[in-house]
Amino acid sequence: MPIDWKRIDWSALDPDQQRAALARPQRRTANDVSDGVRAILDDVRERGGQAVIDWSVKLDGAPPRRIPMTAEIVAEARAALSPADARALRMAAENIRIFHQMTRPADSPWIETTPGVRSRIAWRPIATAGLYVPGGTAPLFSSLMMLAIPAAVAGVRERIAVTPPAKDGGVHPAMIVAAAEGGLDALWLIGGAQAIAALTFGVQLPDGEIPACDKLFGPGNAWVAEAKKQAAALPGGPAVDMPAGPSELMVIVDRDSAPEIAAADLLSQAEHDADAQVILVSTSRATLDYVLTEVEAQISTLPRADIARASLAEARAILVRDLHTACQVANLYGPEHLAIQVEYADELVDEIQAAGAIFVGRWAAETLGDYAAGPSHVLPTDGGARTLGGVTTASFMTSMSVQTVTEAGAAQLAPIAARLARLEGLEAHARAADLRSEG
Image 1: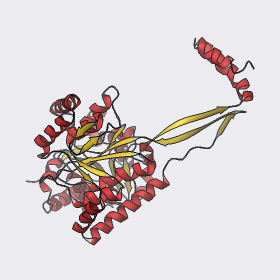
Image 2 (image 1 turned 90 degrees about the vertical axis):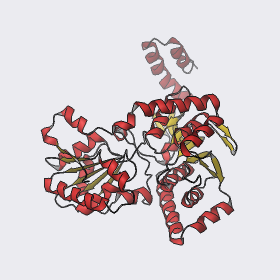
Image 3 (image 1 turned 180 degrees about the vertical axis):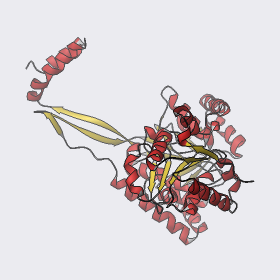
Image 4 (image 1 turned 120 degrees about the vertical axis):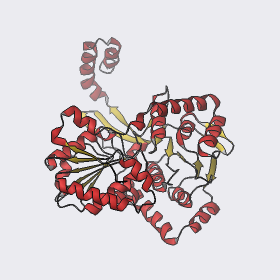
């Protein structure tokens, strides 16, 4: 059955209709997901590890299991891969490590705003990070490296990685090798909202303890994204990296674009998840037709064609007046991934204000970024890119200001601070400042 794309003439819509045309799939915020997640979190908070076991058996068909990264286990996993596969993992890990080492925040120099008053910004790693790695229908070992390696570069002391087990209760050997490349001590086979609950509350399980984590990271399906949201809203709950739910891709094309490349990129995201969303934007109606025809031709040869077709039920093909308008559409949607496949694509980058990652030109395949270019592919979804960036080394760190003041500096600055404190009606503040200038 041909794919029924939702075709949209952008110029024919008013602002409210334009926003409605870019709505995310409803299932991402469906009541059954929200209520189901709440039930799991409440149960794990009440019953601890036993609740995690029960939900894991019910939903994943297997109890939680801890796989230690011993030399023997890692060697066995490497042997199960072809030498070329193992080498590709190693090269991807090295690129990820290099990029995050080079972009790791550094302490700022001392800045003297008043003679004798100096301040600087100091960066510190968080203590405990929970890393959620999607699995289930596809073992996303790439996401494991995209989280574990930046966390290691940041200096996080304790990194707890969880991922759903395979249908047989085991794990793909590439996931073990990726965990080893990321320098992890172990990998927990737990998925879904119950894994997020375990990382949130901390639980004791037969294979060991999962500590409560300071911050949760990682993409996931609608259940995982909702679990992170609810966990962060709990009193004293963990921080979270961002809304990182089902995948999104917007592709901007014009008459000079290659339809087969645009179609391949759209399908690369559609095959992720039935809740994934792809959007095609073009200044040319004919180009839209060419790309959609290519999508139809390519999808029939995909092993995950059923998933891709389900995702494409929420796809959009948008006709715009010009490329400036195409950028406005991108900024309104705030896509997780944005591919600009037009002539002189680099000239449009400055117009983009909201995107998790931008892929400029036909050779910058989003798939390259997914696996091996270097930046983390863990990016904000659901419009989060309008205010948030993707995972970086800084995501695993906190910054704090450090201030030093000499006696002479206090004598100059304290009267100003005291006057402003009294202007706000805070006398105790003012007196604390006065004591620094009375000497």
